[in-house]
Each structure stands twice: as structure tokens, then as C-alpha cells.
Length: 434
Image 1: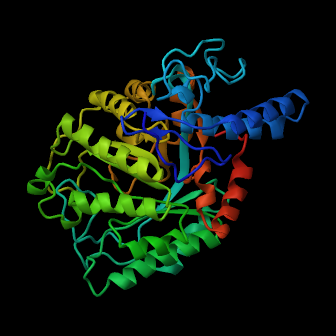
Image 2: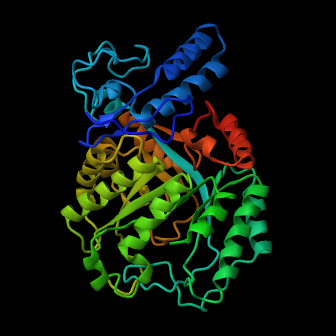
């Protein structure tokens, strides 16, 4: 078997799983995490429930995220590997299927599949401008260039001050796109940067999605963002003849370049697929495989969103909605193709039938994205309240927990100033209910 050269590590210093040249998953470490798990268990037994729960929560997050439990160590090693345990390393009280021998060294290992934790990010969206030079036919967000006033910093400050103390953690900076050659591009970018800086100064954690950026723009935004994102949508070029006919920045190679640059810059990144805009199931596979390939070069993709097209009142082409009944199939395909380090995100406001949302979780979805007052991209579909989501999940034994907009394994990638803000929030939510 050909080994992968890892250029990144877990927070405990061990290497995360990835694919080798044959497509199999490999993992080369993990014992320090088990030491920490044992430490947490000892603290619980000694009566230090808060410290113990915090340690176990952190370990569980990394075990789930990196696929280390119940056989992930055996991924790619083969059945006769002597380095890997033959029993689940998790304590019986915590493991969903204790005393079960590890038999299948593949991504669909039982412990990963039976993890019942679902995350969400308490979030609020700031829109610097709705104007966008792209004209995607399905868009319910954009206005024409010059038709949308830009958000003033003073107005943003009032909005953010009102959010302090509400439990909001993430500030999503979501903007329409000003053309790269426009004389207004520099001012537009500076407004985005200043909004991120403002959010940080008031105690929030910024995450920016503003369309394709230059390498230099991404490097600057890394200074004031704990993570960033860009939807890949679909790789098939045939959409440039239909829904993306008048959307120059939706050229697939432009967006793939963003994912590559984010990896080179060590920016924790979210991307995703938009489903039901004229693609085929083979296109889903191609797009997912491209994401997996880029992640295995850089290890930076936190999440992949699987977003079903949901028609709204503002779009120019009244296309049909993506069938929610098909979404669990896409989730299962994504979980098969993507490395276990990547979390699959399901937008709950776009999957309004509870049984289908639960089916997506059973298929491998583990995150519900940012939950706030309004979905700016899909304004006709309000976000459900997190308590309403918990009421759906709890009867099916799913546990809803808050998360930050950057996952723990990426903390060391961030500037010191951002790591300080992360420490504050991690301590604040550790062991707390949703």
C-alpha cells in the first residue's frame, strides 16, 4: 500500500485519516486521544464531573470527527494489521455497541454510524450587500449591481450589540459579489473585512462566504475569520448553458481553485452541493470525489452542505424543488465517498418533513448548520428554532449540541487572537445543553 504524506495533525499531534493512492482510508495515530479519554473517565469517577465531562466531550468530538472509533484505525491497514485494536477503544459505558469486535476496516464502521450527536451553530447573518454581478436563475438573494445599499458599520454595530448575551456565536458574513474588475471591488472587500473585525471586537466568531476571492483577499480574511466557505454546487459544465448561463463566477474551475487556495492557506473551510438544478446522480459523484481529492491534499474541509434546491418568490426561473425523498440517498453517497473527517450538513429548514430529516441523519448527516433568525439565501424557508429541532431529534435518540464555526482540530491553524476568542467560547459551551 502507498502511504500518504500528512501535512496536518489532530490537536493531540496524531495524523488524521485520509486516502492512499488506492482510495483506501489510512490512519497512523490516535493513542494520545485514548489517554485523554481515560483521564476524563477518571475525573468523572473521582467526582470532578465538570472537568471530566469537558474532557470526554472534546474526545468524543474528535473521535467522531476523525473516524477513530470502532475500527477507523484499521482503515487501509488490512485485517492482519497488528497496530490496530480488535475491540472498540471507547469505554463500554460510552460505546453504542460495547464488546463488539472490529471486523470491517471500512468507513462504514459501526461506531461512526451509531454516533447519535447532531450539531448546529447558533448564528446570525450580516449581508454587506445583496448586489451581485451573477444572475443564477434559481437565486432568491441577489439584486442588480447598484440597486442594493451596502450595510453601514454603524448599523451593523447596533445589530451585533443587540445579539450580545443571546447565545449567538457565529456571525456569517454573506455577500453578493462585486466583479473582480470593478472599481468598487476594493471598497467592497474592505467593508467585508471591517464587518468581520467588528464582529470579533464584540465577542463573536466570523465566518465569511462572499463568492470567489483572490488568493490575497483570502489571506487577509484569514486574519479575521475562524473559518470560511464557498459552495462548489456542481462541477458539470453543462449548467453554464442553463442556470449559470449568466453567472461568470460559477465556472467550476474558478470554484475548485478557491478550495485549493483555502487549503494552501490553512483556512478551515465549508463547501457543498446544490441539488436539483439540472445535474444528474453521476454529477453528484463527480463533485463529491473532487471535494474528497482536494481535502486529502490539504485536510481543511470541515463540512459539506447538501442543499436541496427550494424554489422561492424572487428567482427568475420557477424550477421544481429537489425531491426531499431523494436526499437520504445523496447523504449516503456522500458519506461513502468523502473522508470521515468531513461532516455532512443538512439544512433543516429545507427538509421540513421530520421523518426525512431523521432519515438523512441515519444516512450519515451529523450537522444542521447555522440556525438563526433568517436564511438569507432561502428567505421563503424560515429556520426552525433549535428547541423545535431538539423535540424532533430526542424521540429518535439524537442529541443536539451547539458547536463553534471552526472544529477543534483546526484551532492551531488560526492566529493567536482568534484562538483566544475560541478558548472563551469552548469553555463557555463545554458540557452545556443546547
